[in-house]
Image (cartoon, rainbow, N blue to C red; front, side):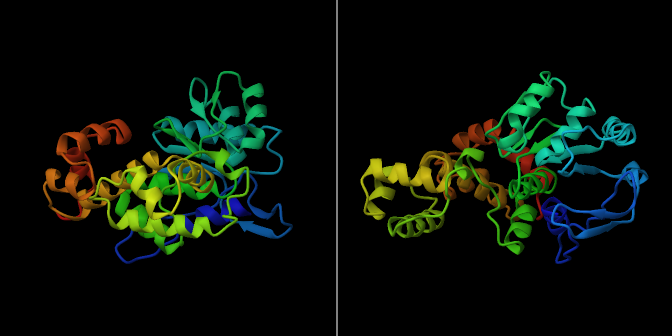
Length: 302
């Protein structure tokens, strides 16, 4: 039920200049489907609904240890072969693996079942700590709430950061989380007042990306030593201050490339990279394309 709720919320029809998705649930046996929480869900569409889909997401199901029937596996394979983007949330990855779509690829699933996926499908390179793994035409995501990370990544990839951020704001979610599943295994809830100071410092950093923002300055503002700050930062966010700032700067650069006509050099300074050359190097490394190519694909000002 959680998986169905996540995808239906993310791909809801919102208007306000956002993409109008044609969303549907389908199954090999249309009708009433009993969910894991006991509530029945009426699914009107059969597998023929996959025939025209641009995106197919395999959702988790309680019986994932038994492969889906041949009709489901064939439908997934046909969708992928004709060019659809095929993704999986949580143990939905087992369906893609059974269909042979993960052979020779990297993939992830819920950390609890990553070992089982690797054991049953040795031809798949399983990354148990990743929130999602993008392999081009096949994308897999981790378990539970990481389904939001998967869907927002798909939006960011196909429509750009502005669209993904707008939908994330509507859902009251962070548009991008750095780190892997390991950060969620222990309690993610701050346990003392130092984390309130940490939250304030991170909010200040977001408003001052044009500044150098060395760790020493962030720690000073949090009234912590550098070592204590780094430890508390990792416990709260699952990543390092450097990686967090890098991701934030790249996301802000994406928004500016999409929504303004500012020169790349000016954008680089505004987000704290200092020069267009540094921004370009980081953009190519992390996003796979140079800033100007990204702007051509996603600009909303042309």
